[in-house]
Image 1 (cartoon, rainbow, N blue to C red):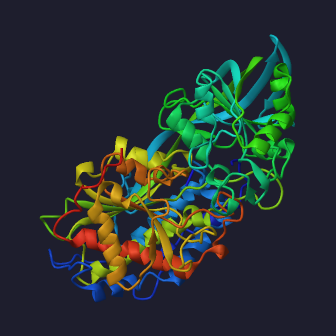
Image 2: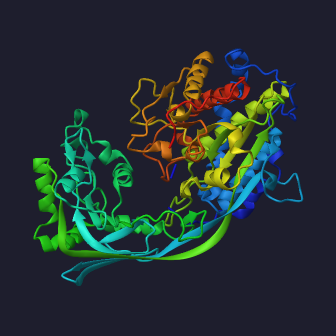
Image 3: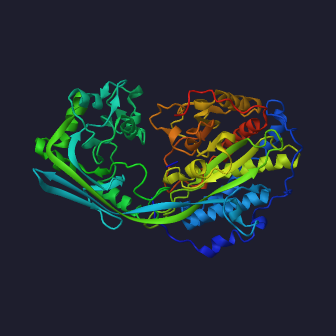
Length: 590
């Protein structure tokens, strides 16, 4: 789900993987798939034993065979537009070719047997940070400056994100940046009550929430555990996206019991992630949504900003933590300036698309889309292991799509081809902002969007969430969005899970628009849902290795991953073979 530069593994070794894909990856008994007779394939509900036969072909061993290669260093982290991503695309095309699935790409090629036949290429526009400069002014005079770039950083601040090239504005201190009436702690309500408008100013906030120690909140949370305002990666930004963005955001990140690194250490790590591919967009840079700059700053720089008030950050924080009441104010006499400089370029990348045509003449124009993203976040600079292999994110989803595709191909070979067509879509650019799926739905849908009856999107189904709240940690999957557009699709998924005997906990922990993590927005189903196409997002939750160097194949729970893929396969089978498409009956996605 949504950090750069690269080291080069030997190209010759990687290319040799694809010189003879059939020899490398052939399995006993493989044969070209044949079309079934029209309209004969039963649903899961009518013939569960038949579907279980093909579910059983999705095995932990086959998933591991794919993933130990796909999420290896040879693919260099699969960052969009890089050599590793393009090698991954060729691997996927080779697998679909071996299964006998038809290519459904849009690339022009003179060779119908070439892997490019499966590709949907498109142009992306890149932007790499050259320099971010942050200046604090007091009384109209500069008092502190921080410069951040791929080659320069300091102990005062570093640039985290944003696109607005120049900002100069005053500052509002917003405490911890929390708006939570249930906890009785709403600093935005306090600003509103005081008539403070932060929309035209920088918002200065502390990390986390009032904490006694790293594992104990001072707020009245359940068991006094830290709330999602601390543990959620996006809770504070999600509130700002809904309530209105400031001119810029300054986050003090080196204070509090959960602050483990200095700003200098974090800046060095952030600088190592710069360069390389950088940010990507489907529009020429300068177009698209303009997001205000976000800087992570030190408490020392925060004190420079607060100096005109006569207060220090430590004093204000201590007051909030002692009284558990918001302390918010305008910092009169201080302004902050940000200037961002970028290098721009163009590049190409490609989705990978395979297709099984439906066997029922009356239904074959309708399509079930099974999707994953095959890109990841690439490499960092430094010594030792620098490759983010993305075994769970989203190697797990991508190799599951391969196994689901192969199960459908085997069923078709036996005379049980799906009545509706099934399209297998591995998108690129997800980590850069859902670009591949956006291109597929908004720019070049290879089938009419009105004919897509369902999207089953798979993003991270290979691990366990340490905070999973249920009683089946070895047999669960989070389902998200299933009832937003089609209640029927939600019920199909539940019934399939039961009649095939898998009985996973189809956990709805995150299945709400009010989820502070906003997972329902954060993978490729989003681009189908916005067109009112019913979808289910299958997800295992995050873990300590999310977007980290340790997201490796040996940490995958392959038996549980197989069960998750099996229930997705069976849900796709049911939707592809029942008489009517899932009704659009939910509350709506938008």
